[in-house]
Length: 278
Image 1 (tube, one colour):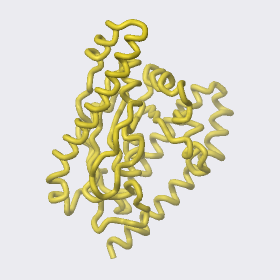
Image 2 (tube, rainbow, N blue to C red):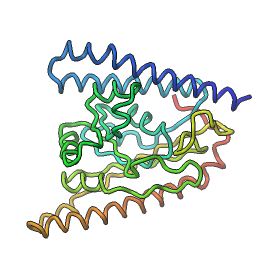
Image 3 (cartoon, rainbow, N blue to C red):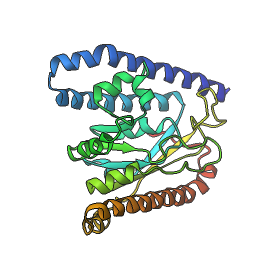
Image 4 (cartoon, rainbow, N blue to C red):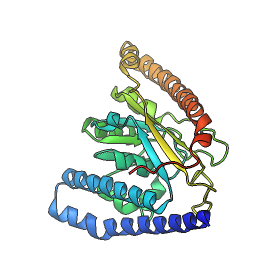
C-alpha cells in the first residue's frame, strides 16, 4: 500500500511540475518581459522564481512521502559565482540543486528546450542549451563570472538505474573550469533507493521511500592547473589545455566514484526510516 501511494504521489508531482512549466511559459514569462524589458534583468527575476518554486516543489514531494532528503555542508552553496559539478543518479537531482542555489543556471539538453512543459522555465531563465556549439563554453564562463551559480552534470546524462556505476565523464565541465580559471564545487549525491534513474519510469517506485543525501565537498581549485596552462603558448597551449581537460575529467570520475562508494556502503542499511528534511 505504501508503494502504491508513492506511485500515485509521484504521478501527481509530475503533473504539478508540468502544470507549473506551462504557467511559467504562458503567464510568468510574458509578464516578466513586460515589466522588465531588459533581458538580463528579466532572466534574473525568472531564475529567482524558479529557485523558489523548485524549493516549494521539493517540500511538496517531502510532504507527499515521495522522497526525503538532507544536505550536508549547505553553507558552501551560500555563495555566488559557483561552478557546481554533481553526479546524476536521478531526475530529481537538478530540482534539488536549483532549490538550494540562488540565481541558478544550468546546461540543459536541446530536447528539453523544445519540450512544451520545460521550455517555459528554460527560455525565461536563459538557461544554457547544449546545442549552442562553440559558444557553449564561453557562455558558461560568462554566466559564472556574472555571479550565476552554474550546475553541470559531467556525465551528461543520468546514471544507470540499478548498477550504481557512473556514466563516462565528458570534458565539458573541465574545459569550462580550465578556460575560465574557475574553481569547481563538487556535490556528491547518493540515494538509498534507485528512483528515476536512466531507463526508470516514474511509476517504477522503489519498495521504500528514497532518501537523498547531497554532500557539498570542498572546492577543487584551478590555480595550479591554470598556472601550467599559462606557461604554454599558441598550439602548444591548446595541446596542453586538451591534455589537462582529459586529466581533470579523469580525476573527476575517480573522485565521484570514490566518494559515492564511500558514502553508499552504509546508506542502504542505515536509512530504513529516514527523517524528511524540512
